[in-house]
Image (cartoon, rainbow, N blue to C red; front, side):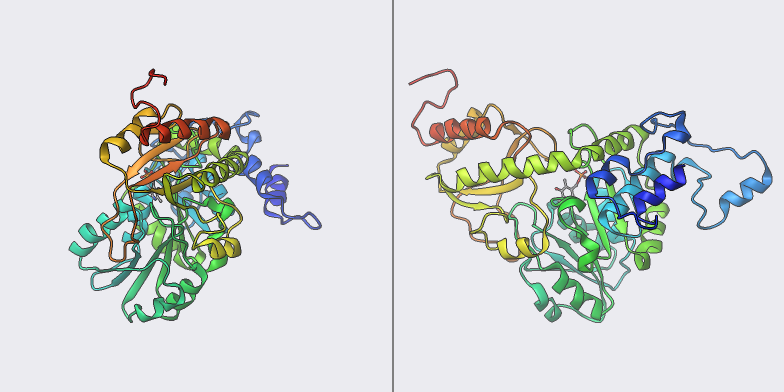
Amino acid sequence: MESLREEVLSGAVGGVARPGVDTRLTHGGRDPASFHGLVNIPACRGSTIVAPSLDEWDARKRPGNPMASYGRFGSPLSRAFEQTVADLEGGHAAIVFPSGLAACTHALLSLVRPGDHLLVTDSVYGPVRSFALGVLQRLGVEVEFYDPRIGGDIRTRLRQNTRVVYVESPGSITFEMQDIAAIAQEAHRVDAFVVMDNTWATPLFFRPFEHGVDVSIQAATKYIVGHSDALLGVATANQATWDLLRQGAHDFGQTAGPDDLYLALRGLRSLGVRLRRHQAGALEVAQWLSDHPAVARVMHPALPGDPGHALWRRDYLGASGLFAVALRPVPTAQLRCFFDRLQLFGLGLSWGGYESLVLPVDPPARVCAPSLPGPLVRIHVGLEDPADLIADLDQALKAMRGLVPCARGQVV
Ligand SMILES: *Cc1c(COP(=O)(O)O)cnc(C)c1O
């Protein structure tokens, strides 16, 4: 019965079409028959896993045996989560990490060697930039940043010793879209790996392995967990890269705790409906902001005027809830007024939860930074009613422009 379930999910049953993504989100990795009928895999705690006989102990240690002999090598929860994510991403296999950043850094560490050349998009998530410039350079890796819009011209930056091209699309903070397929095609000519941070789109809105990516990373902390209550990362590799990634993760003792894995699996079940709602809400808010006199530019690839819009249309199946706005120049005191007046938007790091967030972001110290007229604000649109979010932004922007008093409770 259970094997039939798995065969149906993998599309291996003759005549049965591979189920749609929401069906796979709902059923992937679940196996009630193995857990007394419980719908969800319980949060299993365990370090040691004992064997009933020496024969079985030896069998467990055989390479490639999926049955773990120790908690660090996996649990029913981690395997269910990894297999479901690998299936959604369209890769061969996945491995969990205790945070999204750990997934990024360990994916890189598992691939690069001293003397290698690493190409990193200039729009990369800030902590990955710091890691490359700090740890990787110290280990003898030559790090070079490239313009995220480079596309196939990446060939002019590739060298014989280029080991990895790191991509992130759209980029953190400034949301440039990248031509992943063109970059991957060139990178593979010199046998370089393409590592992608696919957190913004999730596997639902971008299928990285169909565009030539070798390792795809999710900061599961964001949309997969989806409720701002756990930190988790996961990296998926294609078959050719899997052994390196897995070995790299194991060598560094990477694991994740049962509660976080449980929450991530639970988050996956509703990822489809949440993402579509984030998408619709963010588009509504972004469109409203793009008509606002205080706003100079909205950076959101699903908006028709965005420089990355054509690439987004060509390659993406949707847009999530995170984007940025460049405001027109405004004195700091007035900008403070904007943030202080917001009621529904929390002021904080991270994103991907059900709640809306704003964050003032400094223009990144980059090799090819876009010129911005005024302060940059990153916005995550949560699951609230978009009309309420717009009303909240409206009153905060009015206060910023001096049209209503800055302090709350004062009505004009
Ligand atoms: C947040 C984030 C990460 C890191 O995830 P954590 O779980 O916070 O470590 C990596 N990449 C991107 C694009 C992110 O936004």
